[in-house]
Amino acid sequence: MGFQVLETSKLLNYARARSLWIVTFCTGCGGVELPPTATARFDFERFGIISTPSIRQADLLLITGYVTPKTLKRIIIVYEMMRNPKYIIAHGSCPINAGIYWDSYNTVKKLDLYIPVDVWIAGCMPRPEAILRALVKLMRMVKEGKALGWKRYLENFEFYRKNQDRLFGKDWRKREIEKLRFYIHD
Amino acid sequence: MALDVIVEILATVGMVFLLLILGLIFMGIARKVSARIHRRIGPPLYQPILDVIKLWSKIDPSSHGLTFDLGSLIALGGAITAALLLPIMGLKLLSFSGDFIVLMYLMELPALGIMLGAAASGNPFSAVGVYRGLILITGAQLPYALAVMAVAAEYKTLSLTEIVALQQGSILNWGLFRNPFAALVIAIIGLALLDVQPFDIPSAPAEISMGPMVEYGGKHLALMLTAHGLEFVVFATMYSIVFLGGVSDPISFIVKTVFVALLAIFIMNVYPRWRIEQAFSYLWKYPTALALLGLVKAVMLGGAM
Ligand code: SF4
Image (cartoon, rainbow over all chains, first blue to last red; front, side, top):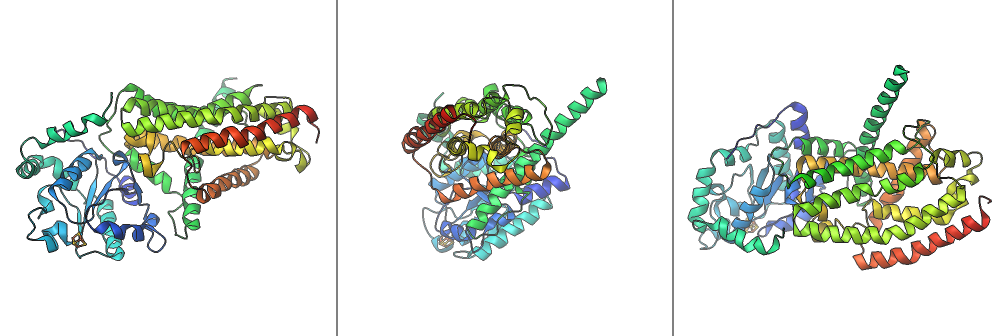
């Protein structure tokens, strides 16, 4: 994995912090709290945050709830398609320690083992105020250059890949590509 | 002699820079006004500038080949060339006797550039977006060409400077009152060219996730955002020049272009998106009929009121 150097300066960090674009991708129950966060009452666009449907254009991935292994595969693919620098916020107690699904056979217990998370929100389910607080905290971290989850992922890629392989089986990436091959035309 | 050339080059560069910034500010106005219409607070006016800086500072751009890269450059280049054709505030940079026609066709270049790059990316969403965009452009061509002919017949000239000169005097000399049909048609076609609602079918964010733009991110997207903002300004300025009596001083430039942009923003926020065949049949019915009326009016009554 090649390492790229991220240029940092006050202006660049400020611009990065003030224009976080969210991937429109929701898991679990937490997605219902996002429309109130986006619309008239709480309005996250005043911080320059918008949601974009295209993964290539986004900076921020919200994991909004419990994660099953099947979803986790998609999350990892989406995360790896996003461009650096990129950030993750995990909503609710489910990504932290599986919450009320603590004894479920089909829920990922510790999201941290598979992808790097920058900010956690506790609660089941977090209210828009909590989400806004997490967003503002992430903005402060980006402005100070402390939101380095993407760098952790690059540096410890072997660790993350080992955990992912243990959960999904050895060559799960190849199998996923085979599933998508039908849609790729050129 | 040499000094003249240097001054001209400096004026050109300054003008392009000013228009680029203005384009981004226009997009900021669009977002702010939309937010106020939704009863939100909305982002600050300079938000698109921050967006462009951020996109420019992202690392690892993933490219899909030369055509993909060229797409965004063609979009920006077309928009800049179109901007230089406009006689703004007494400055005539690339003006010549047929610049109206050239301008009208250059305004389609950004959309075509994006289509070209998108087709090279191989993403299914881009492919759908490109089909839709080409169908929409085909639909817009007929009324567009008829309206341009109507304007040319109305003023009996194809030079933007002369068009401005012909509208001086009373407010009733404005193109808007001389040929309201053509003015209405060009306004509708402008919405289609600028890819805003109800004509944002090619880049429908909720159905085909930005369509042609889906694979573009980082620096490519920064170029495209700039091109899109510039296109917005060029269209507003072109409309003010051809139908609203020209933009000879800074105050009329700002007032008229912002007025045109606000109209587009209001329409954008009120109308939902059409399906592609609805848009196509609409474009070939009402704007085409109106444009024909405008052409008949221009030819029968000539320049007279
Ligand atoms: S934390 Fe609660 S609300 Fe969130 S996904 Fe888990 S169970 Fe659902």
